[in-house]
Image 1 (cartoon, rainbow, N blue to C red):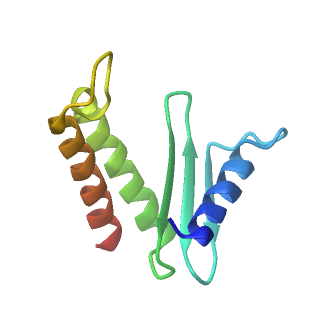
Image 2 (cartoon, one colour):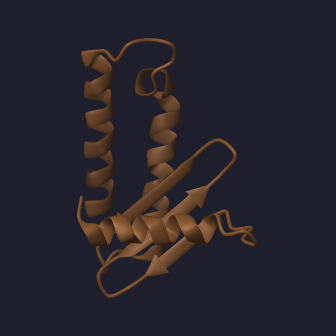
Image 3 (cartoon, rainbow, N blue to C red):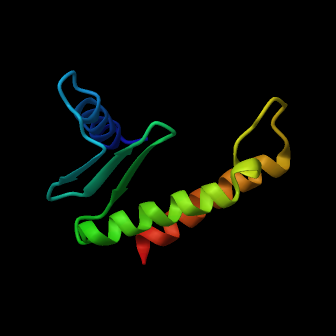
Length: 104
């Protein structure tokens, strides 16, 4: 993982979890990227895309990823058991799906 990506994650995380912050969604735009942190009581989602992706497109893509995860929740998350090859394949599909949405 690149140090700039990790640094961006830390910045987003700190922004939404700051003591006085009451943010649910936080967008950050720079010359190198556009990013989104989305925090709910059930999940936290952090997304990063290239600088030419619109804020609206990034938000729509994040929403599509969440919808997919909700449909596939039992296959995506490990609940009380060992990791199977099938679950690892589903997680890889999630990553491929997420990248495909953000590239469109």
